[in-house]
Amino acid sequence: MTLQTKHAVKDRLAVANKNQCPQCGEWLLAPDWSEYLNERRVRHTWSCEACGYAFETDVFFAAAA
Image (cartoon, rainbow, N blue to C red; front, side, top):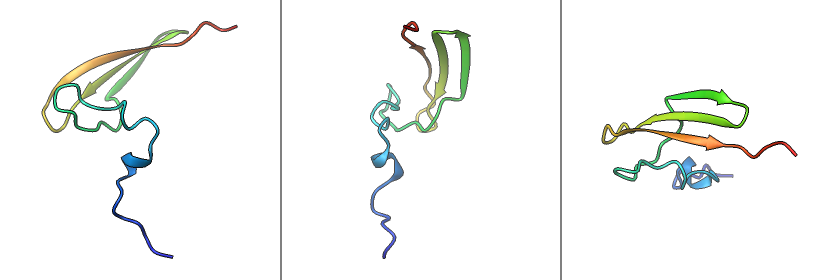
């Protein structure tokens, strides 16, 4: 058994292509801050270490059935 080091962890994550800086395209691991707004909405604040760009995203969840 050998350790496989050629592939980065981000290549194995299902969300890797969603967590990218909109300015430079660098991969972002996690938001700097997450804020619960209500039962259906969460806001994330992001900042890119590569280029310094900062932005926010909102996540909206479907209403409970």
